[in-house]
Length: 251
Image 1 (tube, helix red, strand yellow):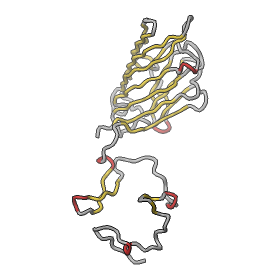
Image 2 (cartoon, one colour):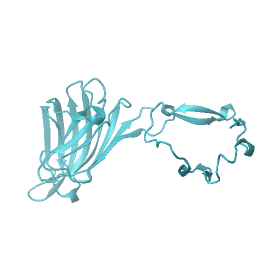
Image 3 (cartoon, rainbow, N blue to C red):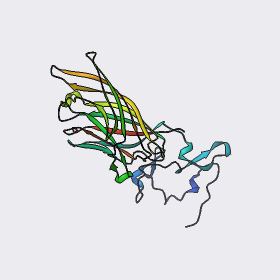
Image 4 (cartoon, rainbow, N blue to C red):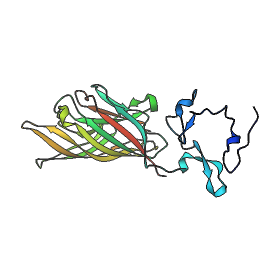
């Protein structure tokens, strides 16, 4: 097959052999993806992946630009786990990488199957095939304010986990713990830290209290953390518990 040169002014009818492009391969000014076969779907993009652009300042010549220079949203999704059935733990592995310094994490419907339990969190190491970090190097500071005007705290040094809430209400109707945390440099060769807030429902003898939760934690070592591990002190997490992790882009 002979080569055809595409003129700068655009593609003319004579520039493309009609036998190479069928009528339904390109329609309504977009590509029909069903006409492309034998290709691998792109599920993620690296900063150095390249896109073709038409440079208007240079007579429309085609050039490439790397993804990192295109800008875009400040939050880039790096991981998510949703429980399809009740489970003792929920983990999100390989969500912290060297691509981003800091991360934003959203927790939804983290409900326990048992009353009066503490909601807890640990770091993971090891990337995609991670393991839970159970070292006694967790420092925890959590403060709670409930709708009756009472206050309570969970604090600790040299613990084996972070404690995020107390006195769980097991009913799925009350939604469990919901919140958002920022994790600071979990991939750096230094200690890892997080801070954030949330809400949960505490089981009490008389009724259920809605509680405002303010949390911070620090891990006392230079471990490189790659994921998160959530669990209750006893009982399971209910189906539907969901954690989404976003890298915070500095571009």
